[in-house]
Amino acid sequence: METQTDGRVYFVSDLHLGAYPVVERTSVPLLMDFLDHVERQKGTLFIVGDLLDFWFEYRTVVPRYPFRLLSRLRTMVDNGCQITYVAGNHDYWMGSFLRNDVGLHTRTEFLDISIGGKRFFISHGDGIATTGELGYRLLKGVLHSTLVSTCFRLLHPDVGMVFARLISRMSRKRSSKNNNQPNLQAFVRQKASEGFDYVILGHLHSPKLIRVGKTTCLVIGDWIDNYSYGVFDHDELRLERWRST
Image (cartoon, rainbow, N blue to C red; front, side):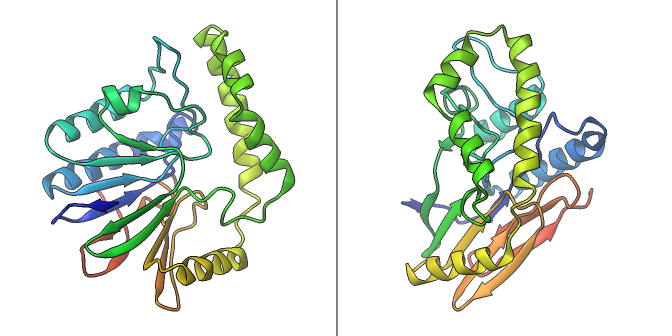
């Protein structure tokens, strides 16, 4: 798959909108500034999971709390920006709304994509750059099951969101234990052997840019403490931090 773009390519992840109301007084305005910048640059944007702390689509209802953000993304799409959303571990049950109504390209698994002649592996990173701790994997398997999603859909949305907050809190506690640098190095070495030039990951929240052989790995970081993002200008991949303009 080739992304046709002459402009800059941006990578962002892990805002967890809805989880940290006090932090969001700062993080959301900064993210809006950043999205304005991407649009002005006519850039391509990859959201690498967990922009929202919980996402679930009923057949006719979606959560109201991310309305401002999703509306902004829709405007960007209408103005010519290509935006791809790669699901994270908090994007439990992505349906058609983000794709059909917001206009995002959505992927529930990793992306193997060519940008400017370079091969990119793009994934949220949960279950890849982690210790593989059993409890976390079991929780993820249960939450993504058809049975659980069907039962959840039977709940009134107001009741469902109470459970959603509990589920998201459990997932954060599990995944926070899994920031494992040696496993990350091994994973990048594997991707290098498969011919990838760049590996893009979210999930770990601690931004870093490392090089293993000829392959560069970007761990994007989060938009809670770090306001970090990646940018690829067809020459190099950089890790940067956003400051209000």
